[in-house]
Image (cartoon, rainbow, N blue to C red; front, side):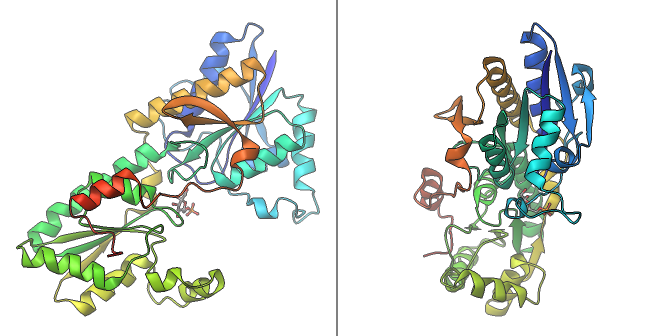
Length: 359
Ligand code: F6P
């Protein structure tokens, strides 16, 4: 009997359950000696404190379309992994001990960058680990795609679509804040899909004068409204030149809730426009997975199942050159996949007159 541990860690997304279903079905269909699953509750915490549920394939039925995670999740920052918990527990040793006590054959970790760093650590400590790239942000290094990203783009695009009609009726400038603190994948993709006029992402620092020029140009050409999509972590050129410490200090001194409000105030101050803010926030992680997300999640689950059947461990499932593949956890741990400012989509967007606020 094969014993497989499963956990979902970090911020959730729409396709965690669909991915687990892919793993479970693959093993159920191809494992001659049977398989038993150990679902750890609330991410690494469940593994640390031995909080788990023994599960069979039946427990994973009907999950293809269900968002969130049936196992629950939590954030367990990697930077604190070597610090004992409040009761003096050594977290890494506790996780190893649960794994060994249960005599697991392997552990599947569905997580983003921080969670995959911990997965790599557990692999280095001798556990059989398979990592799966989860995040709406699509910033996991080593894979072209992460599950969660396709659903998030659809939700963010729907927000931009909906705002278009009201912005046009009232002749307003709308600033729409889209998730992405360090990277701008969702704002870029949703911005293009939703026909935004200006897209501001962390990878391309902007100048407010350029943003105003783009709005004024539309106005002078008779457009009654403008849509500015701004990533949560978009920075001005001046902010980008600050040290990490100085930038944090500047953020702490902010008198408005977020970048969108700051930008909206600035636009209203500089031009004769009626400006409004819209923020879809956590709806971008919520609801059911999109059709494409279900497909990619299923492909990731099947590939993880294949790794387990072959006995290949220490890898993360990845899409490389459009194909399902694997990459060593040690190669991807601690790296971030940023948007390349010279990429085709940005070039194409610029060709159509979309401004990124940098020129
Ligand atoms: O999962 C990534 C992410 O969605 C970011 O884009 C966002 O800024 C962050 O998580 C917020 O998550 P939470 O409120 O759960 O900490």
